[in-house]
Length: 251
Ligand code: BTN
View (cartoon, helix red, strand yellow):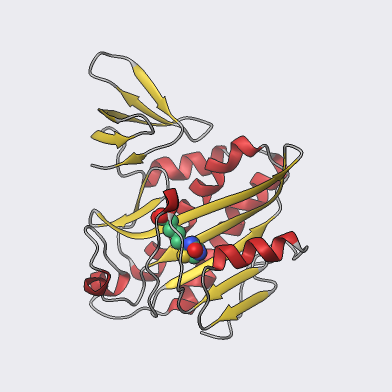
């Protein structure tokens, strides 16, 4: 996968490719700190210390897609959830285009196929004087992996679902174009209504009873969609609407 001829304008203008790396997000952070330009893409065949959300690790054997992008948007730090959603939408759409599989989204950062996780997003931000200095958008996709070796509950891969391997280069190209199509209008006009609309169309939980793990415990209720700021709305059995800014849908 060493060379990749991207179709996007800004994302992937400059690409750093690694056979093995600890974490593409960590390297991207270090590169952004010393001034690497927006759109710089870091790809690895294998990560030895891949990072997931909430301090978890992301198992990253060869065959998967592990990439990070340096972005430099002028946005409020509060807009971070929107960037995570943007990446989720673009990833689900790219998977659909390349495989025809029905990839859907689970708030806040999971992409599922047949109710099993196939991909996750880790967005990290460094803020200076209240203004984001840069954002690292990290995306991991279980592409050509036999998920059995991951020994994870509820995980799948594109290969497991398709019965054959996919062209990872084509998937990455499609993904970069998809991210760019959503990102540039957002960056320029500070409007993310298009991202929310697309998220809604791919949201696997909308209207369903869900259990959500929050910082303070587990909540059960009906998923009522996502607010403008990326918070998930849950209708509790007592009729109250709860807005969750952080957490995880567990079922
Ligand atoms: C999650 O679902 O918890 C997020 C997983 C994000 C994994 C990707 S792989 C590329 C990038 N580098 C990392 O160390 N993590 C992200």
